[in-house]
Length: 477
Image 1 (cartoon, rainbow, N blue to C red):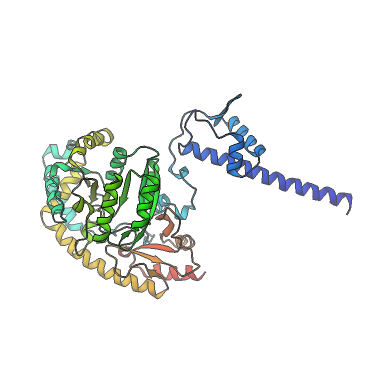
Image 2: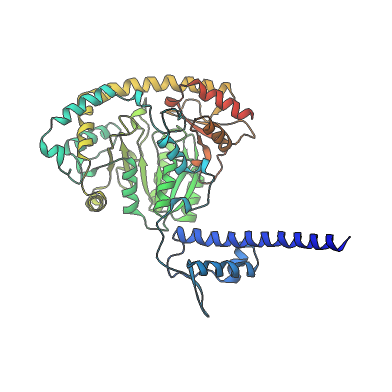
């Protein structure tokens, strides 16, 4: 080999080694930055020793030394001679995207939400979680708006009371009686939405670092909200009759969670319904472990026949019941509620004042008008029948192209479906997005990342034939 060739090979080897070294250093730096962004390392917190971090990252000590030195030069950390390195400065604004592992944006729950919310009129949204506007009671809404517009000046311009409109809370209490819940209006607080209800309860019940159980899969915004509250989230596999009770018991014993958040009547995303047997076993375990349960019942009015409610079995002792009208009336009319134990209401009221001050008075008046005049009942009768037809049609179309529903006859508006072997839902979602179709890949709902073969379909948003053509083409690619 010539001298020139030897020099060339040596230069190439040195360049490759340098590239690898730089990549490892940058990986270590990114890990520390992520810990600072997620508040795992707060200002003044000591970083792991060079030896310990090198072992944990499986890199050389010199790599960690260089990474720490660069971070110190940036001002992200500070060196204290003879003591080590410490996180420096004030906390950066909370970045939800930086908390937890970086996911491909196609399966990030916040990305799915943003794609659905920001989609223009040309986009089809079988992956979104709400009804098409044309399926909502437009005439009844306009009539109710005219009624509310004639209200007193105070109703139109003043703050609402912290607990919310008394007549609506009384009506909600009577509706809950129909599901076996003995609730007084004084135990009900109106909120701006179901999401705000969960946010308030997380503020009230957990501290950063507390463990919260969720289903796997579960509604992806549970993940995002709990991430924002800096909780440790642990998931338990969900079955067609509820959470896997044996694994639920193991999670209680191992992680000592403070809270469990779930849908009991109609589960999102699977459409499954909690069985009475599973509900009783779940409550027994919760009682033994001093576990609080937040029961999100936002899809209650889509039921054809009443399903078990944890709050009914429990009597609102350790179960908190929440709901809203965003899915059934209007996503623009933000009105939800919390039904909680009596001795919590005073503190929840203070928390609501501190975070939102007054209530959404006009939205509450509008919902009350629709519930009182019979419009809502008639609308839901028609909507359930329309959803049942759409469920059958969408299921048949999906089966015809090799996509299989997880359960045969789910309730509500969602189909949780498995793709053929070897097909990844995130890949399908990316391809569909290029054709102006927003899908909801399974791992957006799965904390364990075990739902890569699943997609959630909103049957109310699946009326366009293009959806199935694009799906078939994407799976064949």
